[in-house]
Image 1 (cartoon, rainbow, N blue to C red):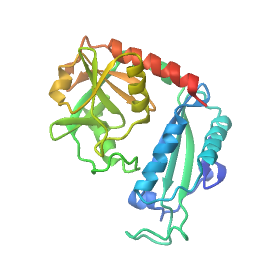
Image 2 (image 1 turned 180 degrees about the horizontal axis):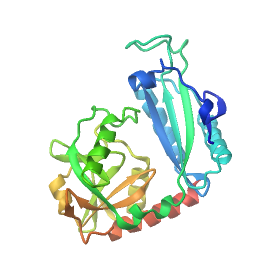
Image 3 (image 1 turned 90 degrees about the horizontal axis):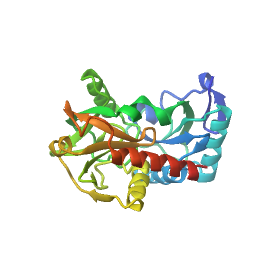
Image 4 (image 1 turned 90 degrees about the vertical axis):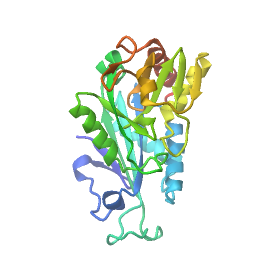
Length: 286
């Protein structure tokens, strides 16, 4: 049984309880982060900590736990649960007031709820998806406008995953005003003539921690990167396509809406970036 963290305590998972009045449960009033674990170490922890602070700030929630404390909790949970490959999930909500109300509770009397738990995923670096690539469908992007805040309101991305599953595919790329925004839980890219093309940062997409690292590594490897809008039709005609996320790293996309991309296998650029990302991440993991 896993040991989890709840509001300053390490507990067996079946003993960790959160109030029915918690605003994360009632209002999706909270944020989260997922930090990957490779070889028992944390990948890009600093980046996740910085984005956590930004997300909380954008929602007007004062961060209840310092970066040093957060790192200590991450490391303790990885150790207690013997996680070699996997991740640490972190969620902070605005807390549990005495009753349900749309108005924010007084932070002086309603402390935040802080939850962390681990997920062990042995073999995540050599998965079938990474070897064979994934198939995606395109769907309308019907999320709220502040996708740059990593909130726990994930209903539509979950629906997108289920739409993809119903179509016999692995994931969905969302489209707004004719242009690809991102995947349901990842950033999206195409490659044309060895040029990596991805949507630029704005409130329309999540500012991916893995995205930032991969684009930095791509530029260091003398790969050309262009941040701009692109259509799903352009994506279908690309030489390659891929996604990035904290849990899938860099993963090739081999089919979009039933149209084969390239030769139907993960391409050179995505495979090379995956190699670089894993190698560099392991070097810098803490």
